[in-house]
Amino acid sequence: MKRSYVWETAEEMDAALARRFRQIRRRRGISQQELSDNSGVSYGSLKRFEQTGQISLLSLTRLAMAMNCADEIRNLFSEVPYLSMEEVLRERK
Image (cartoon, rainbow, N blue to C red; front, side, top):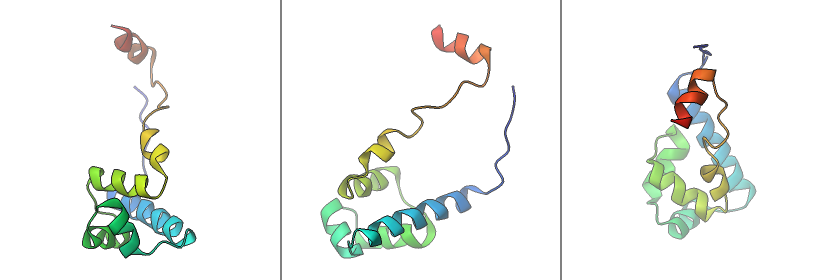
């Protein structure tokens, strides 16, 4: 099986995701408090997410829905390419 290497840590990937999310929130002119109120995610959890990238998947989904970005979550892992013919055959079983 061919293995690709990731040159960043999970924490770095999470922090980059949080930066992109914060950028979208600001671009849309939504305050953290407003987003917290609209999503049902606590203000503290939202603030921690934007600062550190740490958040539960359920809270991230709620935030995405409140920002009209649900498709971004819905499409996660939807177009993952096969790594080998064996993987294709295993899926068909």
